[in-house]
Image (tube, rainbow, N blue to C red):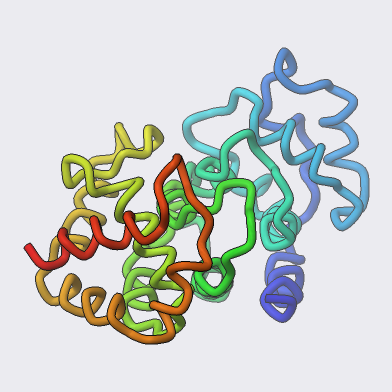
Length: 246
């Protein structure tokens, strides 16, 4: 990830700081903070600035030059686990509101590398995060306008048992009931819900994860996981196993 962030500063560094007022409602964001965002060196902008900037009312279509300038620092803060919005699903909301032709090939490659590396790192960790469910991370990237297929392919083929833990938790808490994504941020995103449902329900994918649930490295983790919502992780595994065998 450090190499990707360094490349992001280099690739996006050609974009100048905004010279016009930012696309952030002055009723939502202190004008002095807006001025600081435009005037302070990019690397000095803290989580607080981006939290205020991202949470402010904004246009449905974003000013490209503004987003391109801030993007490397935004990615850096996300990579460091900083809270830059009240909900992780909306961290990259401004990126997703840019026109589809915004990013050139080099810039798009940075975004794709960032998404895959961030998701892979997330699946390899069982430590507490602000919102640690993988569905929220996938939704963050979808709302940011990035492709989910490379991330889902990685998850399907990943042999790290911790990624299987994430699958079990995500399947049980965010999909199993009603065979539908339950995250409220996806309510108005039928394309996201369809992509996830097709991936979760595909017989070949279910067979892959059913096999992963039987691996000794995964089974050793089952009893180490604490209860969640008064349920033991083993109970959650049993429910997901039953779903996979349907």
